[in-house]
Image (tube, rainbow, N blue to C red; front, side, top):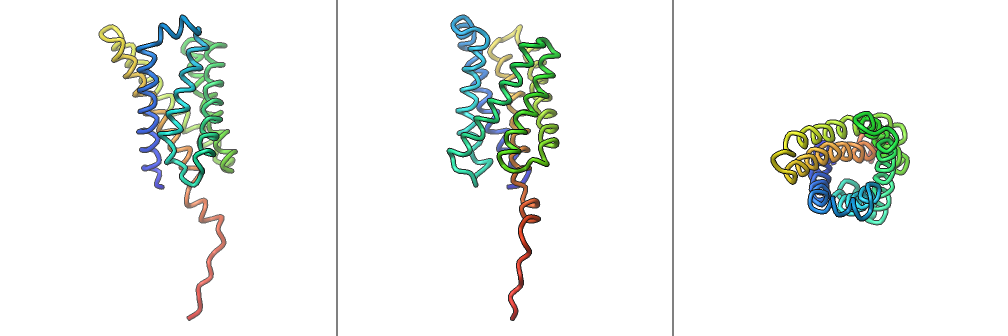
Length: 196
């Protein structure tokens, strides 16, 4: 799979999942906050992201069984979410969002890179994911601030779309790098030509 196709699949799949989850926030967010608190609401969102992400991003790693991909994506996204939330609850504010973006990207890349035996690419994968995630997240935050006065639903969906595009692009890159055909070719022994 080419890098462009992998990134495109990541964007399409995760942006769709993100729109659903942010739409859920728009419709049921207040009720969920009252019933479960902030941490409980985030936990429900993580479960939704994992379920939808597993289904919509499956094609990024066709060589893995569905169960293996589901386990891998669940582990990586839980690591990302726990790291992001820990930074948010400890630091708060814009600084907490930046620290969370970095910590979450490192955690996600670490889980995927180690599981798929691509450890040497973890720094690059984490850097790219941090950049794409940050662009998507903070562009979405800006869109939310601009639109929330006119329509709360539109504001939340705009944030979800931007976040989904940024995170999805990074996820696509991470899975592509772990399965880069040029790396596989280097690892394969050269084939002998048949004598004629």
